[in-house]
Amino acid sequence: MFQWDAPDYFYLIILLPMMGLAYGLLQLWKHRARNRFGSSDLLAALAPDSSSFKNHMKFAVLLLGFMALIFALANPKIGTELETVKREGVDLVFAVDVSKSMLAEDIAPNRLEKAKRLVSETINKLSGDRVGIIAYAASAIPQLPITTDYESAKLFLQALNTDMLSSQGTAIAEAIELSKTYFDDENQTNRVLLIFSDGEDHEEGGQMAATAAAAEGITIFTVALGTEKGDVIPLKQNGVTSSFKKDAEGEVVITRMNTDILQTVADNTGGLFLIGDNTSEVVSAITDRLVAMDKAEFEAKQFVRFKDQYQWLLAIGLFFICFDLFLLNRKTKWIKSLNLFNDK
Image 1 (cartoon, one colour):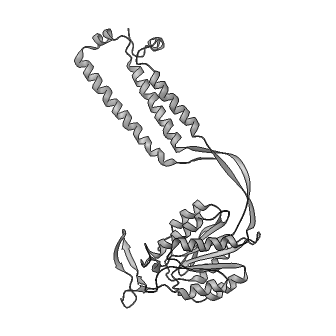
Image 2 (cartoon, helix red, strand yellow):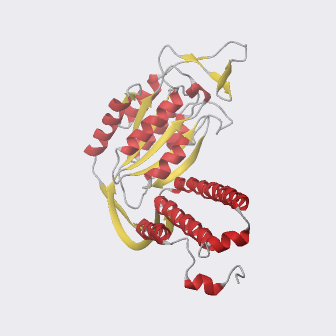
Image 3 (cartoon, helix red, strand yellow):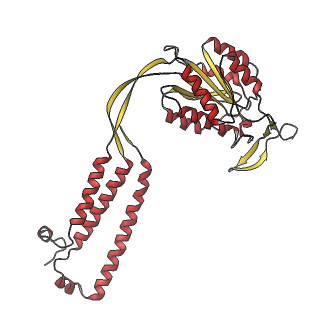
């Protein structure tokens, strides 16, 4: 297998045609300057060993050297080894509320972005645990199946937005039911569902779903986002607030954090209920509780160990640059024997 460690460095390749253009303009200027000095026959007589081909070759070698260095910066990696790994940890499913009320800005920058940051910081603290992601509003949809690939989890997390589900609302019961399909029945790992929401549950059944989840060994942590005072729901176009969400009577909607349902869901499963205003405190409380849980061993997984290969390209690049430095502009015997320009 093959991959690039830092592909952003490929943008430096744009420097190569710029160097080619500068070289071409320089050669054009030199040609015109020589023509003003004297005829081509006179110049050939004055400098018989001067080689324009060697100039072009030196520049081509220099370009090859710089290109090799750019590829070295991008650091190609080749998978050369297969390794079997056994992990011990907890299965965690993050259920993030993506209803429109999560756009309220009573907690900076808004409730949804705060939820994403809390999830991301929690993932950063994990080691060996498996994670999955669910997005929910009036219904719940799977985003990322259970995995140990934390980088992929963060990518899927950042893609969450309030336009993912057309039906609006906050159905915690739907998220709980969907989370049951994520957990591994075979390995019997500890199961944790983390719900991030403002608690405005517009559907019945959240408490019953939590009780049923507890019977299946699922512990639910809930994190409440927002304030009791509440805030309006901004509607934005191109990042600029154009209006605020209104109800059927045309009144501006005020959305408030509802802790009751979130507290009850957590209590029914012996989990944690947290207010999500302080990121470090929330993450510490979650990770401390996870550390205290028993770690179950799950699936042996094979993966490819990638090895850096930049050193080869670095050596090639330095070789070309050094070769360019020691390559003279004068004609040599083999250049003369080629007679590239039909010299007499």
